Image 1 (cartoon, rainbow, N blue to C red):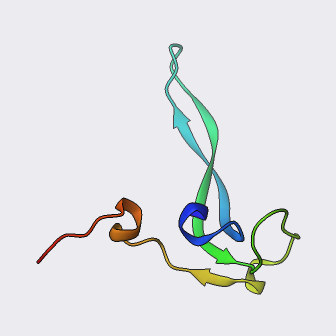
Image 2 (image 1 turned 180 degrees about the vertical axis):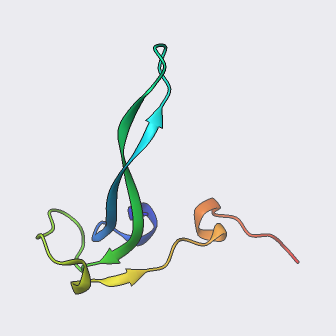
Length: 73
């Protein structure tokens, strides 16, 4: 997401867990569940720790932005 929206975009996450298969039957591992992305402004670098309500919600990249191509209609 930072490649498309700049370095000042940060994820708002929820820490969850998920099952991970192993040779010995499996175990739980941590997993970051991204809820949304917020933009705190600026041009990147180290960001101060701010509450998630301080930033502006960012839209996900479109298919055209992600692939750098367009589909003719």
